[in-house]
Length: 69
Image 1 (spheres, rainbow, N blue to C red):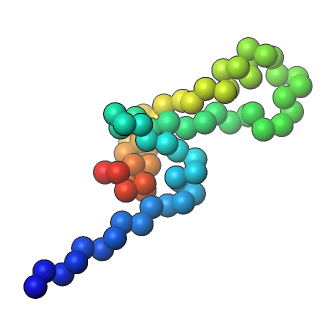
Image 2: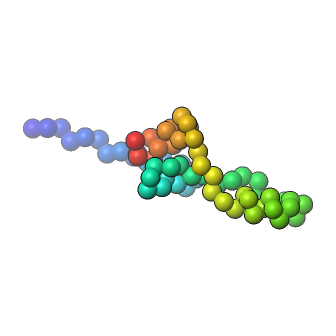
Image 3: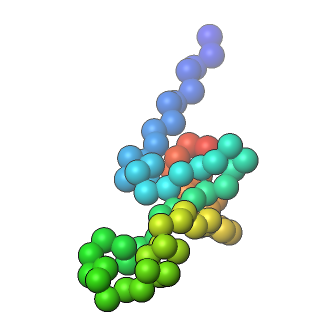
């Protein structure tokens, strides 16, 4: 009888901070948006709204922690 494989546990802290798209891209939200927004320009705040892509080995690491690799 074959031994059942261990269930992959995902890291909840990583799953709340990163998101993997259908094509496998890893997205993160930008920092510097929580407070002290008054002195930042509207242009900067608009750009911080968007999701940014994570590249390279770090993206691989995030995928592994999310059980996607």
